[in-house]
Length: 331
Image 1: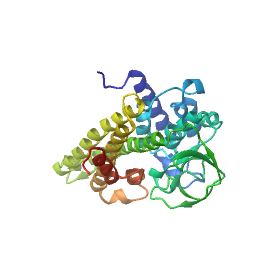
Image 2: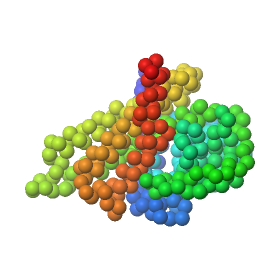
Image 3: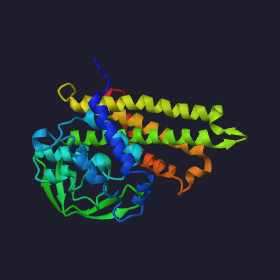
Image 4: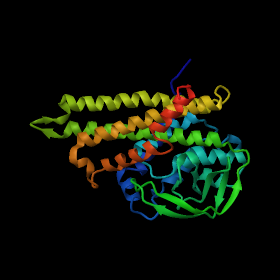
């Protein structure tokens, strides 16, 4: 059996990486903290033109007909770049649900002409990008609905490029008949885990670069064994967590081979390890950078705060550790 990604999957990942490097550099992420809508100008339409927003929609409905395995590393790249857009919520959760239900909102969503975010029980009471979204796919009474005309207010977030909102009045609820709530929830957890891996990689790269340049007593601080141990532990955490994220994507992509309980176990295992990995990366990066890691002017704080936010989003490591234990009959 071949476990590697295909050449086509690698090429799509690389194309998205190049796009994000061009349109979403650190200065664009920083600008999203203070601009009116918390978004990067031109990025959403570019993702639509590349097909990212339509990746998980059947070809018959105008999409690319891809699976969770095809897109999991795209979300990893989104984490690495610090993308402030609700990419996971839109492209891998809401849009596939709209496609399952045959919603008339689908065409504009896959073209990048609209933005759809989500509000699921596993994600708590806040809605990412709720104030900027054109629609919200929400969990209601054991199913999925589209909220129309919801009234919301913004709430403070540790990562100000992740604009959070709380719903005051839901407005009209349009049922998404045929959409799978459990699948949507699992995809939200998996997508968050994939972004955690990307953030952890970015923190590791930034820290390796810094300790290789920072001089102390006439030599780079990176030559110290304690620094090497910190960074080696971060690398090990990432290398252990990433395959579990990819394995969970395979479970989601192959429902014929995995029932819902097995899929949920794999997804929880992935999020548990990914949250631990990004937490470890945040601690090591902050410690190795010293006081400069706390400063607002230094870009490291953008990824530290993204890491802290994603680690807790859609269930932290403790929550998913309990889920895995229950799936294995240990608790």
